[in-house]
Length: 285
Image 1: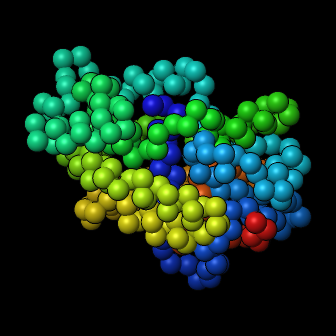
Image 2 (image 1 turned 90 degrees about the vertical axis):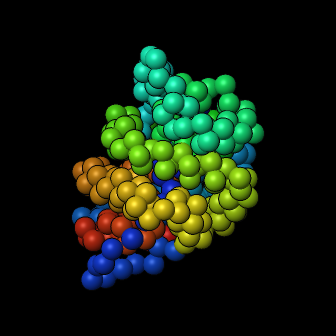
């Protein structure tokens, strides 16, 4: 449940700048500073599929030669326990009472098809929504976890751009009405999730960030108010925060930055934000 919670947290990006760069394709980007420092920015996908766990040669080379690995968040055992606690409702509460019998019945049906129906009655609406929006675990580590594990074995410095609390607060501060709308959207999306997931994987393997962006925008939410709220809190705000925290790391050079692929493209994506701060970017894979 916990390991894939943030699968789709990282999938979505757009604004107006005097000069924009083409961010439509490419998973690995070379990031050069004006002072000659060089790092690499790699777009991941938070799944444990064999097709993505085997790094292409150019990505592997950049990873091996980096002094430090920068990721979105580092999740330890205690963090996993904390996430689990914060996803659960308070004593005496149950999901059916909160969302109503009609939606709850549809939630149970969607959850049953994913094998998680026994868990949802005591879960908060936002928590169930994230569970329905994530793929079934494969038993393999997700790409980001594998990179962290390998970095530790190789003695690389490990840096997180966000904390668990910063990510969870996004959902916890969501008004209950929006949480329920979010859950409703997740139930609808679950009906075609396998198709969406397959298309998303194909776009990722083709390094087509533009296609991933369009897929995410299509499936994120249908209600305008909810879509705008999720776009701001899950993407735009986080991109700004990560870009600011990346600057001191990039000034040192030698970093391999691995974040969800759809934090990269668009006018409010990390690539454009770093470009606006004077960095030269080039797609190398």
